[in-house]
Amino acid sequence: MATRPRALSGIQPTAGSFHLGNYLGAIRQYVALQETHDAFYMVVDLHAITIPQEPADLRANTRLAAAQLLAAGLDPQRCTLFIQSHVPEHAQLGWVMNCLTGFGEASRMTQFKDKSAKQGADRATVGLFTYPILQVADILLYQADSVPVGEDQRQHVELTRDLAERFNTRFGSTFTIPKPHIVKEVAKIYDLQDPSIKMSKSASTPKGLVNLLDDPKVTAKKIKSAVTDTGTEIRFDAQGKPGISNLLTIYSTLTGADIADLEQRYEGKGYGALKVDLADAMVDFVTPFRSRTQEYLDDPETLDSILAEGAEKARAVAAETLAQAYDRIGFLPAKH
Ligand code: AQP
Image (cartoon, rainbow, N blue to C red; front, side, top):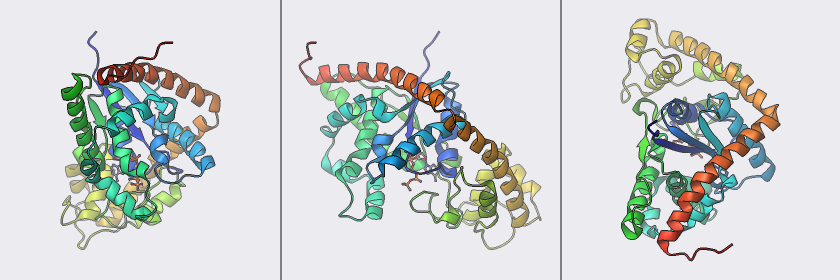
């Protein structure tokens, strides 16, 4: 049997719930790729501590993140799901990649600029500055061909490609050069109250952010009070009608309906009708999602054993890649 291409991605356990942008931009792609790829997905707790975390919250959110990924459709029979800190090779290869990255090159990462601005210049850590480089190691350890992410992560996958090529040129062919897997239509889901910015847990106001684990009634209300544009026509026009276009994207992706069909269905009906139906579609989606997440949380033994098995499978791959990279660099092998 031909081996499948590899996919790798990670998501941070930095909130009590994933939001709709995380789900549509990234997690749906994780679920799809497990059918066609040898897929590795991780909860990136090492990345989470680039911003201060309360230890008890971090622990709880890490479990919650794993439970939500399973509830969203990741199947441990078809993919490898693990916690990043359970595989120490990430930090080890991360150091190597730090030593290959130019300071100016790292300084150009726009995510660092955004995130450090939110933290305040004095409070941003060196870890926040170098987190894209840890992400490089995350991807290269698994020899990933494809990296499903939202648009905001494109620059980091480009950095990964650059560093993989640099390492391969300097030390001999070692790493697969990965490609971002970004689905254009959902690459950037926008804030419901300000459709000029991406939906994000740190930048969005509570009314602009749809958390998947919120009470469905709250979610329905947020959809119904989403900012729309002047006029009444329901038409996809990302520039001229960003609010309604965002709602059409969300509706189309959740229900599988074509945007053109939606435009026809709502012709002459006004924004209210679309919002009511989208609110219903959201409730239909989040209600079972919430209960499936709760089922995993209520059964910590099963969750732990899925994560233990995932870490074991991930370590086998990561250790082999790291050993090869260490050897190429010229590190003296340890004799046991
Ligand atoms: N609005 C979005 N639209 C599409 N994709 C998105 N992603 C995040 N927001 C959107 C994608 O979700 C994946 C996980 O991202 P993460 O672990 O980096 O989550 P995050 O950055 O903590 O999410 P936020 O809300 O964007 O956090 P802040 O506010 O801290 O920056 C990634 O693939 C990401 O592209």
